[in-house]
Image 1 (cartoon, one colour):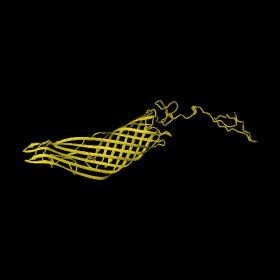
Image 2 (spheres, one colour; image 1 turned 90 degrees about the vertical axis):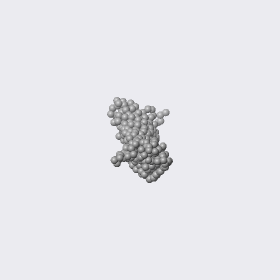
Image 3 (cartoon, helix red, strand yellow; image 1 turned 180 degrees about the vertical axis):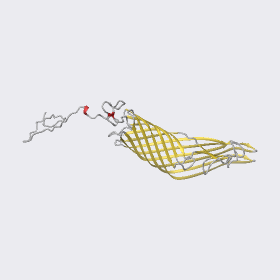
Image 4 (cartoon, one colour; image 1 turned 60 degrees about the vertical axis):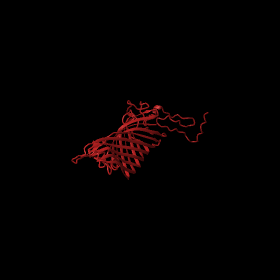
Length: 392
């Protein structure tokens, strides 16, 4: 039931203050009622994409939206941060990179006139997987881990049938030379020295970071700082074989030399990264770019293993040889890495997930990580990447 009106104090008049455009209806007891508004007078509801739709835009912006939808009304790179809610970020990728070593010589050839020329390994496109997983809290801070693997082998061959021509590996202190000082097969005019050279590169890289996501002028930024572990294996292998034969009473049944050169770096250090994505159209197309710098301290081990096998009968004297030699060195090493990538992204929302796909060009430079045939040198990578990811 209604409460009785409060008694009025003597000599006091009750005055209702009114403002233009506000209702003046009074409740019993002299209290002012709150003003009422229609739904059309309220601010529009968020679209779920991090911006407000204008009149007639519907739940999401489309090609028919007007300028009231904002300068870029497509979805942002990652799921925009929502108060009180975090989200996962997952991504898998394939990298297509061509390593360019500071020294990629397969062998050196010295002609009879003393002229020396170098023959390089051909450039090869190596393919490797990459994956990352992270979680961003409602504050915009989060964590992310990333793993990358790359592996490639390239091979070339040659032959030497002329004792006056010298073919040698570009390695020191151990190496293979034709005609071989350890074997007189080719020098005796027997057989042909056949060479096989191969070069191998394998990378295993892992990153763990603390990340921060933020947006400015329709652009999403993802900053990261953390630690990196890297193991880089590079190797150079050379084999010389001669099928042997008989000439002037000299017989060779088996003649072979093998050289295995290995250069391995393993280290830890800090890493920093930045991802940027800016929407280009209203239907999910964006431009993206990322950069990373890493600095690692570790140990570089450079080793060489040589083996010579020869079974022959020279001037009636049997010769059965099986010798080997090795050389190893260790070095504390500081390796720095710079990585950049840029391209296009397309994204769309399906239910509570935001899916995106990226493709772009990539470049990396690894300083002082050595090369397959030497403990010193730099390695560059040129190529591209294809990525697919989801935020939830």
